[in-house]
Length: 231
Image (cartoon, rainbow, N blue to C red; front, side, top):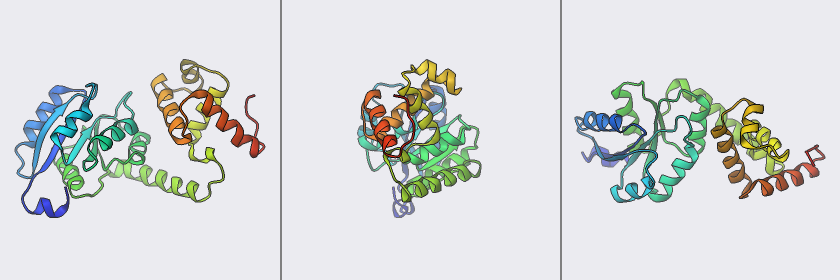
């Protein structure tokens, strides 16, 4: 919803998506006391088709939880495909600035901690409803730093692997060595779910659909630059 709509007195329509149903119900009740925000529905993150509900409800803003195993890019892509007009605000228990950066890269319009006040949440929802982004100061620095680095890499891009982060390159190297997700997790000191998230991002960035394709692209790119890679 744009600024002119909010000024006209039409409330921002919000859909809540979270693992905790009780939290969603409590937030819906609290937000219902505001005159310019209305919760049109809510569902759990693990529901099989939350995108269908978004299409039916047609919210202006969707809040999503990306903590633990949830991949911000996957969730945001799901909702943006289902209902493109909606803005997406991450409402999460996570404090990880890297997750905030991933969410921003995936197109999130805001990031709010579950420990924040209701005033902070309503402010973020209003900003999103007006087409503005909202990231708190403790996340904003890393988000801006990461996005600037992305721009710099894009301006000096010489090969397909330049789109990958350093961590994604580490995972790709392990994939090329034939390691399984559990082995990669142990070697790189991350969870198996994080390995799978990085792997999905590698596939998306390299426009491939399998480990074999990803390794083939990587070997060819590194062969051209004469950089060693596992045979």
